Every structure is written in C-alpha cells, then in structure tokens.
Picture 1 (tube, rainbow, N blue to C red):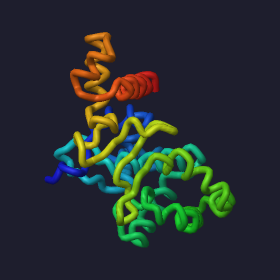
Picture 2 (cartoon, rainbow, N blue to C red):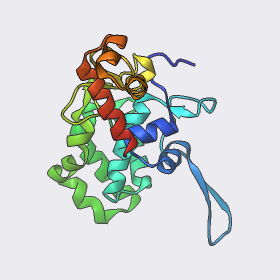
Picture 3 (cartoon, helix red, strand yellow):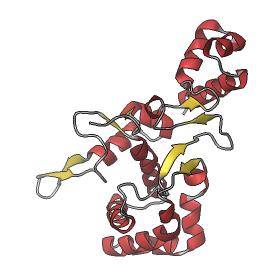
Length: 228
C-alpha cells in the first residue's frame, strides 16, 4: 500500500482539521446501517466513495480530506446524501478522476452535474439553488477553493487551511500531509508542543530553525483547532 505522497489522517485528525463532526465523517466515508421501521430489516448504506486506503487503515487521504469538505458544504445547504452520491459518481466519470469535487473542472461544470443529480433523486425543491450560477458559486467557491493549489492535471496538490494566510500548509508530499509551517516545513503540532513546554517563542524558533513568525502561525493554527 502506498502512503508516501498520499497523505494520511486518522478520522479524529480529519475532524479537527475540517471541523466536521467525527460521526458525519465516518458515516460519509465508511458507510453506516440503520433498521427500516416498516420491515424491521437492517439497511446498509455504502460510503459516498471508496477512500484511497483499504480497510486495514482506519484513516483517510489528503484528497479524501479535501473532498469531504464539499460534502459538508452541500449538506449545510440541504442537499441530500443521495444527490451528492449521484453527483460524485457522474463527475468521476466525466472528469476521469476519483476526486471530482476538488478538480478545477467542477467549478465550471459542477452546477449542471448537480442539477441532473437532483432531478434523478427527485429533489426538485432545491433545483433553483444549483441552477442559478451565482447561488451555486456561493456554496463552493470562497472558502472551499480559496486555499487550494492545483497541479498540472488540475487536481489539488496542497491546501492552505487558514483564510488569508499561507503560513500553514497541508502538502501530501511532506510529513504525510499533516499541517506544517510553510517556512521551514515543521509540523505545527511539534512547534506548538515545544512552545507549551519551553514558553519561549525565540528559543523554539532557534531550536527548529524556523522564523519566530512561523512559531506564531503554528500556535495560532493549533489553538484554532482546539477551539473548533
């Protein structure tokens, strides 16, 4: 199994970084079951897509992490999981990628794909939302795409999670995709823990050979996760 360059996050780590409830992450990416009230039979609901890791790894990849943020955005606007599943399947086929929501092509063609999926799922009451380009862009553009850098294939290569800041980055090629400071490539959690012990930003900066501003950024980022 290839882990290098893919990124690896436990579900707890993914929940902290994305601020998505752990229960939702597991339901969306692992599937779930429920008992039908009429038939009393157990119904198995599959995951929205197959993650990059098999069942031996209880975690998700960098692309899974970014993709699931789009799921949450649509859920917050009332789109059903059935429609999201249909849209994801159709977009994967059209764009020839396993992670279509984070593809740049989705920014231009996603509205049509979701409108078609909603019709198929019978969610006609929400059609107006996605058929209006302006409304659709309000859902997917500002925060979701803002910090993503794309590679030559128009797929997500790295993500700067803090709004209006490029001091912290998630890069699947470095530290298994864990949050690092861009200036020095040291994990934010390491700098934060070192400061918690030493209480001296200058000392921590010298110890890990990073600017004091990078230590400040690491502390601010880790504290933002703790209060999420």
